Length: 410
Image (tube, rainbow, N blue to C red):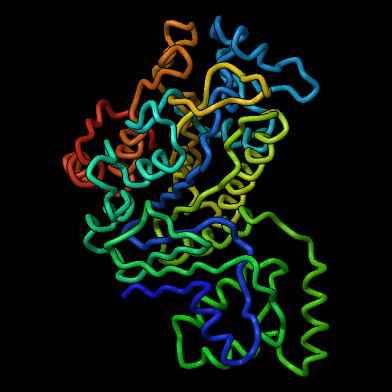
């Protein structure tokens, strides 16, 4: 049975005792699912349309300089040469040790089948549904949920959503648990104690509540928050003086701990990729959060699990090849897939690079997509979980032609 915990549930309960209950500070959903076997997959949705041309810069393409200027290889904080043709955005420099160990890779010029309208909403819906078209309405189930349906030994109640919105990529009909806390409810130590009292007869709600407290801002310990009101307030104030970490780091640590238990598949999202204006200062912030999330996952799951883990970050579409008048980029087509993990056969930029001459661009404005991003995801699923290619092409991603195996996994 799906157990939904959201602001409505919180307020309905807190109204009985006249206080506001705790809320997780997370800004994006997290979904977790347990599956059989000893391989792990983490899917990160980069909401807003990441500019792959800036993240992995094809400076070896003769047309690149005319579109974007030089690749910044000689700048004060230079891009990092990867292979003599592509260079990595300096904001991802912390990931270079993974690249050097073959645990970081990229696939350029990839996309979903979505074309021309370039709507965030439709693009994200298509990415999460894993379909070829949105005609006839959106499928109620996401492609990761269909993966669970095709893994017969998956746990019955082992998927979670943590955040204000559910993740459609793991939505319906396979059994999940969701918790959608809001970020505008104040946390008080009295509320923690009272919440624990009223939740004593509801183990599912109590467990989810305490999990959120464990990853909330300040890492308040609900067990420690006992005693008189003054003692509880003193302890709460002491907790808030701890060094703060980003939401993505807390999400990644939470997921990593679950991966060390029964969870095998996880998905969450990172926002902030819609860079219509002044892309130079805004993109590094989003890339820094992506880098923190990947490294936190690695540090939390540690060696044996990390060595069998693949992390993939995908976005709904790329961005225009040319900068606009506001020194930003507009919605495009072909984009970039980021991959990491000890299971990855990385250390390279994969894909059939289409070129950046005007005649090589899609609609003379965007990177031309040369491979369906679902095909790469499909081969990962085949390698990680043993799903037959026929199941992937008919059930997981209906109508997909997987094409040749890119051998992404060691």
